[in-house]
Image (cartoon, rainbow, N blue to C red; front, top):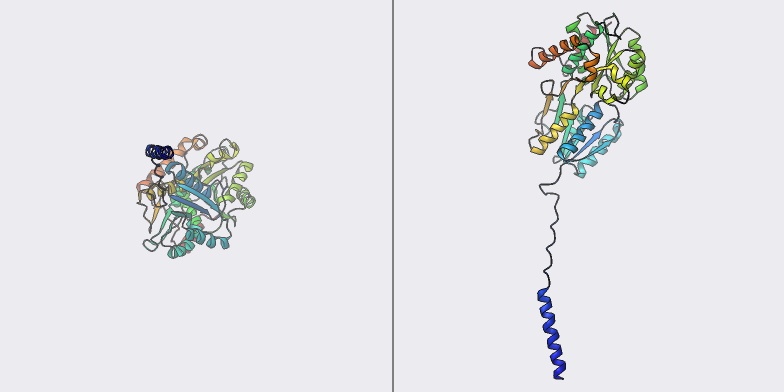
Length: 373
């Protein structure tokens, strides 16, 4: 009996020693909450149109790409097309979900809708490009407008110099063209600047003005451009998003010239379709991509002026024309020098380009009629 008790005591002692030598349990790793300061900001770009226009929407999409690559944001792009019945439910769902730090969209299309929704969701931030807001009225909305009239002024200077030159695809008639997608205040701003620039070179110049009636109809855009070329126009500036691609096709077929819009369109065709790249002498740039990248940086710093809008022109890097290898090789040096001088005068304020934004329709009509064929 004593032997059994002794064995039991020894066993108990051994178990006690082993437990004392065991490793302590490792502390659990704390979970990182959504409020952690290292959380990546999240932006979503809602496309109220279509990507693939090699112009306006694609420039905005590139801005989202730059925000992702350079700032490390989590981003998303949602295409909802031009069917406006889809717009409000989409924006409402996104705002109600609260997943994104900022919802980005084209303010020239959906600006009024966003302003209304922003009042229902005061904690949701919105970034609108290509529009203005009343400063102080919408504290969770930041808007960017562009002085497209300034870049268009340079395009008008270029077009007038080209049409009166001895360039290969120019003709003796002083006729240039402009094609808009639809009648719209921003398109009128492009047009007014274009006319003023052209008239600064050639007061008697004639500007053919047409509208496709669509932002997406490439075939109609091509047909509209061919009609202008057949009337003696040798260079056209289309501001028509996807429909403008048809104008580029027409320029190739008719051996004429085009001025691109929004993105550096010649470079978008580089290595893909050199014939198209070479008829695009330059492009009027609305630096949507760079302006969105800038907004992302300011948001990250906590200094983006929500509740206000900023207007970006040539001086601020928000507008201008593309200076690329096609411009350098296809546009004669003397013309490029004249365009450069005009740019310097606009930048310095010596030349103040009229804006159609806020201008009475009668005055816009007077400007258009002053160059009517």
